[in-house]
Length: 216
Image (cartoon, rainbow, N blue to C red; front, side, top):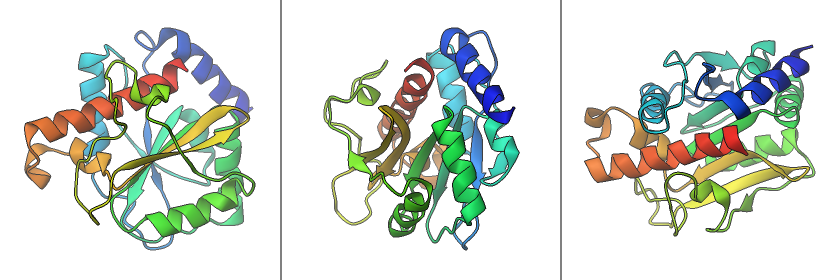
């Protein structure tokens, strides 16, 4: 029944995103990493999308456990942090069912998450590897055009930003921004003192992700 509920949400939102209010969520995980980092980021992204994409997304963004049946109430969820993440077998199975049933996961490496999230996502989809999405992928060309792929929001290790995806049965089910830190760019201005240009780049790319998810 929960899978049918998620399918119904996605069917409604794909055709009626601007009329039907939907909710996004933050994923809460175990392992010691700070899943709660960037508390203002997703609410700010939602406000930006509601203004600039005329979407109708709730500004109430709850935290949901990966292993909870509540996960299936949200067509898109966001995961971030700086450190370790550990998925139990039950959590990995729940996330796999969520993603294979039509859900979408956005991961934003806040610095230090990379080795752990790659390890744990192999529990979710053992036979699927992250692939770097080409710059002509539709996720970079929604309302806002990013001809060179992900914008560089925060400097970590002097590397170029990369956008990786997990593709299940021909559908992009997870988008992972690395060496980019979109979530930091969505936060309130005073948190990181980013320039307005950088915040706008981050918010516009975030809006592209949301538009891609609901209209693919």
